Length: 212
Image (tube, rainbow, N blue to C red; front, side, top):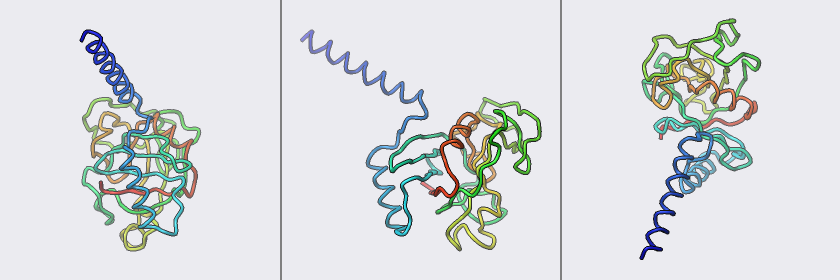
């Protein structure tokens, strides 16, 4: 009986330690296997002519970004999408859904927390707000990844065009709001995370944004 109790306690400790470590390490994949396979199946059916070996998936309701490389889940990042929800209409300040691709990468040599305007470094360094409160300024920091919609009538063309709406993946001064809907349509990451992601992705990589 004593041996069984010790065994149970040891197994519990190992499980707790592993889970705690997973929570601390935000870069480790946390999408469960069933959901991952469902996502891949969905994409292969929805976009049969596309190859989703390397791609980014943003889950709006999850407030997470998943990076797949070589068909495997490589990284997971907490994000902040629009405080107005998902949508593609110009002026809505919503985060667009559907299939996109990486159009451009800006800020390669910008220091961490450096402020960018018009995709260029201003020379200023942002003061990062670590608390979950808005600072009433949409400050773009560190890196910018522009995306282009690929689905006409959904996120491409007219007033639905993600590129014309200047929808970016970028760093933010409001790091305390990461994990909550707070942006004006863009996908925000913590500054260290957007630097990491920037180095791992390539132009033309698919970006799938789903309201789930």
